[in-house]
Image (cartoon, rainbow over all chains, first blue to last red; front, side, top):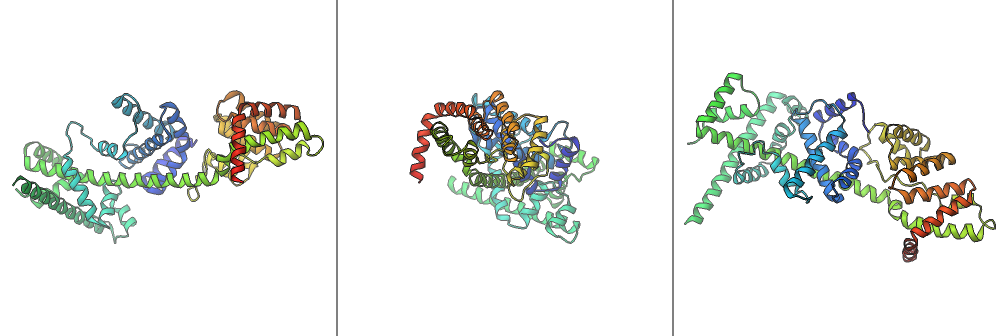
Length: 198
Length: 246
């Protein structure tokens, strides 16, 4: 196993400044052990184990990107197994027995940080539709900023902008365009509803 | 009422963590008391949620492609792994016949070993090209895959000192067989058989081969008979399959 506090910190730093390559490396490093453990511990199939491992890796990655995880007191392996354990237990608590996880549904629920304030599903669906219409490079730029939590200097380098100010301007323009597309989707939707009402 | 550009800008700066403490306090108060502003805030939150959702979905798809690549590599590199049971089961019968009826006439036990021994594939942690990691653990597996058994054996021994794992014991035994360290290999396989339920068949198979190599035909026969009895239906299935393949 990858060991030592310095190495754990190095892994976190690499993921923090990296992207999918680092994500894939971590995935491969702990995959076999995780699958052996989770399938035995929770009596689930290999495919269910893989679904949970993929979610565990995504949470680990997301926690690092959002600055929630800067240092590890244990090891990456222990951390990942801990996430896996919570995922399996949460799944079993809801369903009383282990049933396969729907990853997309789970990801959507994971993003809701205030469970008492339900997200407007319709607007969320329209925002997703608008995002798909936004196109590149805007989509990539705002994903780097809001999902990967990259700063403007990192975005400048990744997307080869002239300087961070240009990147920032571009990001504001992309968000303005996205809001406009969302508004159009909402308007389109309310027109359909009005037509249906008549 | 259409939101003003200033309000839109303010909400964007909130989510970009650019507001001062004073601005933040004013902002929170407006969210609490101004319904239109609250709606604007909620919409921006959903938009950013959709962006993050897309990022997660993109990375999930990426992980699925990595998984597919691993599966592809495993089915390629473990061609022997999957057929291993069939091969070993058929070989058990063949070696038993050879030991019982043909020796010492035709083949020596060393020759039988050479005919039937092939190192067990690394099905435990196969290396994916281009994504090699430089940990002691991955280096030991990588050395095994490139047939550098000396480096692999040293690496596996070090790993076993920290934590004993059946897969590593099996590969260490195989490395020792390749290096001619027959006695050490036998110790590895005996430990594996005595301590773990996993990989029992494999360990017994390689232990019998290691006995053949050291000329201890009686011990080899004993294990092979045990394997033959336990896997008798398996062995006939293997022969049937092999006939079909041929």
